[in-house]
Length: 261
Ligand code: SF4
Image (cartoon, rainbow, N blue to C red):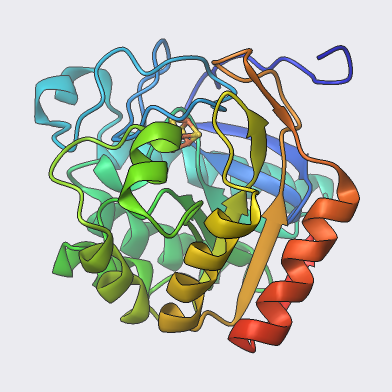
């Protein structure tokens, strides 16, 4: 565990730019509370520790969430500063302390962010890191499709493994998530592999997951393993040859491009 880094919750609405393994220099947008994680999942590997109350309903937490006007004010200030200082930024990314699409005004905030991005930083891509739990909601899919990069989580091809590894809030039906992901434009799948108390990297689990990948047919699959200290210390990294083997399976058996991070 010595090689894994710790990370604290993000403070404020805007953070970074941070160097991201997948996005380059990324300016983060946190639509979630500053002092706790709000998420529909409770992943064993979460870098922010355990989710106190996994939920798909953010309304009870509304007082802890930034209002759209606060988000746009913070964004405009950050964008102006980036332009003034001529900083290099590769992406503006919805991520932060949990699942960004849970914010009740997510769609409105995406539209406002697009307008500001077009005005100040038109060359920078708008991205999201999402756990995919809300792709069953039509209005969320419409908003996701307004972004440039949709990087959506799918760690396994069986509900049993997803329940063990990601602890999703019910109702969670894999077939509905797959249908939602299939409906997104140019979707990128992100999949994290671990071993230990629970694994999704054994050949049987990988075969099931590849079936789901084949159904979704994303434009790219991003494969990675633990980089930060996980909530559950009884899981650990898979090695690079295993990730590369899984990546080759994605290419050969699903016909989909894959990258290891
Ligand atoms: S989806 Fe992301 S934020 Fe939510 S518990 Fe999993 S790793 Fe943590």
